[in-house]
Image (cartoon, rainbow, N blue to C red):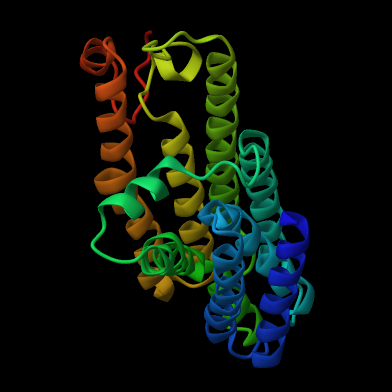
Amino acid sequence: MIIGLYVVATAIAVIVTEAVGTDHPYRGLVLGFAASVAFLYVASQVVQNGSTFDAWWSVMPPALAVWFAITADGSGARNWAIAACALLWGIRLTANWAIGWTGLDHEDWRYRMLYETAPMPRWAVSFTSVHLFPLVVVTLGSLPIATAVAHTSDSTGREFGALDVVAIVLAVIGVALEHFADVDLRRFNRTKNPGDVLTAGLWSRSRHPNYLGEMFWWWSLFVFALAADTGSWWTGIGALAMTVMFLTASIPIAEKRSAERRPGWEAYKASTPMLIPKLRK
């Protein structure tokens, strides 16, 4: 069912983006993303499970990055580099979600918490918090994908160069951090006892190496935008929004839950940096 939903959602996004055309890549990206979210929101209400939308985060940016690389005018070396990095990131993140999601019997605990605490009906919480908020943040973060297309199509962009290489390195580092952090986490979840704290691998050096890797990925897109056109500095609002979201929402929520459930959390917190890994364990 999930595969079917995302095949349709991706087709909707591509059709809308194609209808807008590569002459207006920003508009095409925004409308393509919005159309796919509208479809998946309706589907999530039918099955009454907001987690059916979780894969959108990692499916849609690579899908449109590849589509832009195929359809944009010019050589598009940068567009293909973005598409390749996005595919690497998206396939890994989607696979990690698929491994951990058991099916329609499971819904993210954060969604259930919102349903219980927000002063709105379930459908409104799902629309605003589960679907609309990620749409806004991911769209902002993905603006550099459209920037690369815009400055390939109108021939004002700079040639593939050193900044593009920096962006690729940042993207690969981000994906690697997320991959190894998630491998450690899955291994821990298979063997843990109630109240245990994960202190192995990357988690012995940073409390949130997976979020750090995700930040690296979104900032790599911004560097791609600068490589295409330094005047596109404003697209950094997306990576900044992602960083603020992780620092003010995702990380505090995760840490609060860990402090409530894990007796050794405070000692781990005192000895381990939140994000930037320490050199020694």
